[in-house]
Image (cartoon, rainbow, N blue to C red; front, side, top):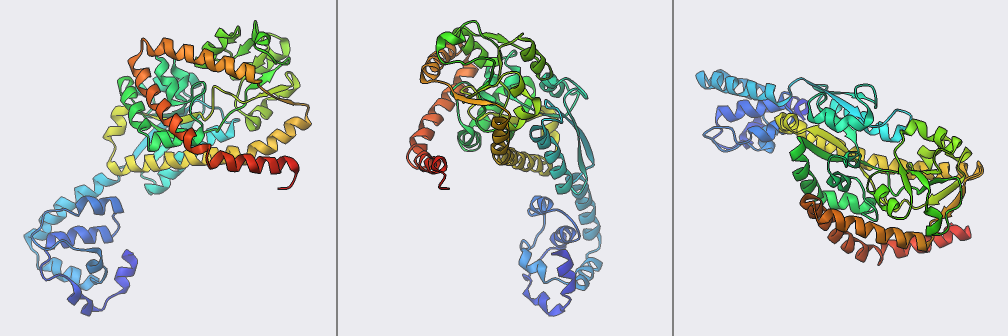
Length: 429
């Protein structure tokens, strides 16, 4: 619009300006027209002056000759205005370079790409003034140490999952997913509208962190098993790679939870060191070749109905950023959040077909197993709620939100989906 302004040089338009415009206001607004960002325009709207505030429509018709004529007659006032305006402009878009470590490797490309998406968005939005260099898991710190690297200032931010850090406090799990928790849409809605982001960050502040949702995988699969699991009794003695609160629930059902690094899971299944593993879903699971060593592919992952992935920021460093840069980060994370779920939705179906063609046997968890798992989960929650006030505060909020969510979802959303899925099975879509 600044370019267009200078193409309109008819001085007659000056008559459309308000009668009293202080030169200080003119200087500020023309600095905006000469290249300042919209955020700067908003910041200086209330700049000191004696005239009527200048509206965009008025400045739109102000030609360059009129501007410089005003400047020539302003004297000391113009110099003062320039001195005041220049620092404001410089401070609005300072040169900053950050580092972001990820908890994910580059071969899990959808998870990893959220980091690069955020960095690219910030670079573009800031005209290259705010640069974020991205590092995969292990390049600076191991994936499960990302939160510590942020809180201690080793890096300014990370892309990770809250539930990786339940060893510090089980409350972390509620930031990602818990057994029989929110689905993906409910998770996004709770964070955005239901007060979830505020509740989580109230908790994270005690760890020197600030977080924004920056991804969601959607409901995950229940894992790969070397043998069929039809009853609760079949779970007894099962050695399964599963961690977090899900591991605690499974333990109540007789499972022996195992914590094994992602890169070692295939070998552990092949050798029989473990009997089962959970991972993500078809798109990521196919790359690891689990179907070759454990053909039974169960669903759903009742412990991950809609797991959120977050951008973690060093709280002090985030608060020190210009407001415009904070806004850029919020927008970039929101975009990454949407894109991740869209990518998984787009790629999982094709990968699932390929897995079945390779020999995967799809099996749903029986009602008996789901009911027993649900009951065990409630026992785990009761134990934690009784001794952890922070956990209970967030858990209660999610529970209330989930009840309302399913009250609505079952009326329109799921009834529509159910009908359409019957048509899909009939082959009429």
